[in-house]
Length: 295
Image (cartoon, rainbow, N blue to C red; front, side, top):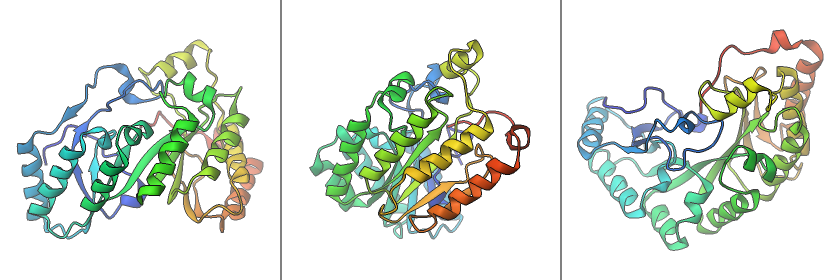
């Protein structure tokens, strides 16, 4: 299959979805922690010929999925008309596909009208996966996210209004040792304001070549130890409301030293207990993960 990205990045909830790569890179590309922040990965679209070739291969493989995840850093950034054309193209080859999902930034949502979002929903768009990264304004500014917590919440409330589902993700340790408590508490506060179908957490592992890795190497940013990351995750869970609308909490990313997963609020206390047991029973050497993890 013709691809631009060697590694497949898809949300855990899309593990049974058909996959179709649409683009490589991110239309923003300035977050200090991200592999796209080096400026060497311009946003690229797969050509129509490559898309058709890949769809033909899916047909030849006997793909029967009714749901498709469109691969790319933030596919929603593309024009609504182009996305609608992609939906129609997919159905020409795979008429059984009825739902589409993709990654997005909150500002991609902000740049579309309610009418455009509703039209995409009618065309099959079902779920957006959005990295909020943190609910703390200072942390988002420090990592050059280009969005504020208020802007993110406003975008998510718009998705609620137009009937689009969304899964969210955030990064444990993004505030470093100085702001780990604020990161946990403010991110939980953001989650308490919105209605995601899932919350996914990953642990910060500075990637070589990123601005954040340089900050870590020079000492201007101090990453959390594995134990501190678990303490932040525990505080995050403790601060998520016990009356939160049901959603899946996924803390099983390879960067996390102790995997936890469950439905909120039902499994909240069980996951907190698992993290507490790990914090009490192991040292940082036991918990450490090897290497840097990309996103």
